View: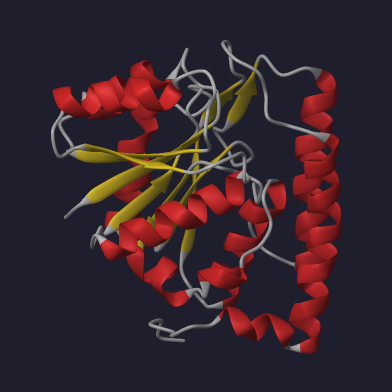
Length: 250
């Protein structure tokens, strides 16, 4: 069955060729879709060069500016559904997510999970090269999200995910509006509310060695307020607008 790894980029010229080569090196035949937000450093040109080397396995969608992580993934999801991919992955370009874990996430989805999350906070998961403040933000944000929403997911802000297409097909993607951590939380919240089976797979998350982090105070603020808003909408019934068509047996 067809498998697509979506990699959003903005100024990732130092990493993009290496991460694509790594993804394409496995026996499992993954395809790669890069969603580039107008990187001024030439990231898109590097991808286009690789496309000639790996015909039919690398694709690029170029957008006009820096529109945000969440909208990049939504763009990629819609592209993947249109092109009939069965398993769709989210993955960072900077090697903080190890390509070697792709097969482990795929295995979870091929064996009953509808959504597999590369988790830092289940048994066996870990982080590497993180400063103390980053650890506190991440762990605290995960605990805060679980308390507010009741989601039984230990790493709700995780950005390394494998979806069975029925999950993305069952969510009204046009209503997912957040761009940072809150986007990751909102997608998991929607999948959980729709009754899809979610499995967390332990990974080691390594902080980027090359390039600049995209983390900002605005993204953290969005996550804090976004979690409250999602729970309020769920309590009042307004979150039901996420349902497009449910293909889950409750």
